Length: 85
Image 1: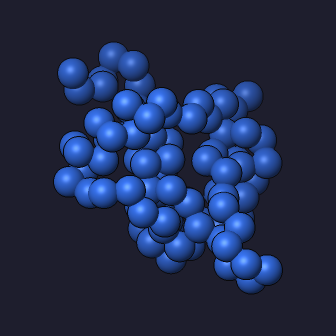
Image 2: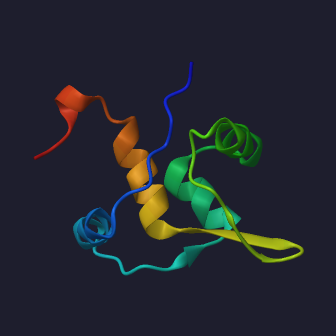
């Protein structure tokens, strides 16, 4: 069973972005892959299972993700006993 992805609160989004030294922005697929290291097909499978952030459709042929959603996804993969304070 795959753990479900939980969307971060707006406060948590800001915290994650601050830690990463980034501001909120849309991330296209090539950068998404570098950030999460998941292939397109694996990310799509996890998204369908509810275990990955949902993509945002920009046009018929273009999608993106919020950077804060991807950062939150990564953080949620870290075992609870290993998360930094």
